[in-house]
Image (cartoon, rainbow, N blue to C red; front, top):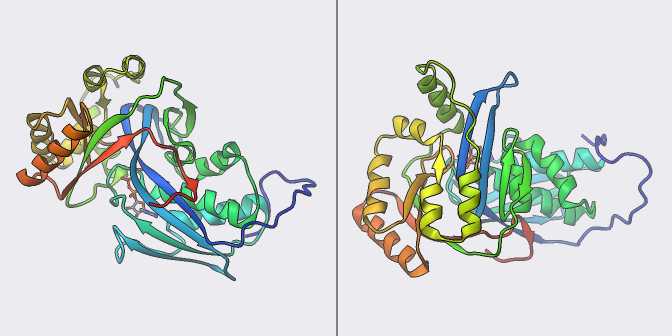
Length: 321
Ligand code: ATP
């Protein structure tokens, strides 16, 4: 599709683009706070969430080509469809449609973000494809314009265009950066054996809530935001919260053992990431994070435990993974 729905009108900016390859590194996200409100008429839940981009990365490389193709290696290779359903392909097509140019590129993904893990790996790849193709094609959109296209692709995609730490409202797609004095937080990321579907987690939450007399109000992120500003890991640990956690635990009861094991190993707090099943633990510092990760792996309560820090920037050109 080459019809433009984007800026339209006369636009005589030079559109030479880069000769390629363009390599983009994009992080995973965790939700430090995930308040889930009632189901809206459009099928989305109203959210109030605080995202943080962390240092587990996918890498997408875009080269010039005569058609649009995708290859991949790493997490999920051989499982994940590389056709029009893949979010990287959908993102390239959406950018081409927005800018009114042909969607010609050879994309290659090196995935490290686990599939269906609650870390928004698919959304990350969509953000990476937008940034990479924008540079390859010389369409030269601003981050804010890329975020408009991103919002059509998925609730988490705009955040991954920006990265850092940000408040997400609406269904998560409306992003406001959180300006706090720079602080690095240290995380342990416990990856589960098998993914969990995001729609299944929301459906389970709706089922659990159907038993309440009235739907709970949307929880705001005030305590979490104050804890971030306070720069005190113990306080941040107490403020972490995820309304989807009860649903993830109902669908995957073994996650309760993982959460307990992380806290017993010395984490300040543990939480299910987004819709799960990945669990993330806040550590007091980098050395403790390494120690907790090693202990979790030895305990056999997860497929793998990795350390990460955040916040980190969103999809960016040129940084190696
Ligand atoms: P979120 O936290 O945003 O709910 P998630 O981390 O749980 O997402 P993803 O890895 O983003 O899950 O994938 C969710 C689904 O999206 C996958 O099961 C897959 O079917 C689909 N998908 C499409 N493209 C991709 C991609 N490039 N990488 C991963 N999943 C993709």
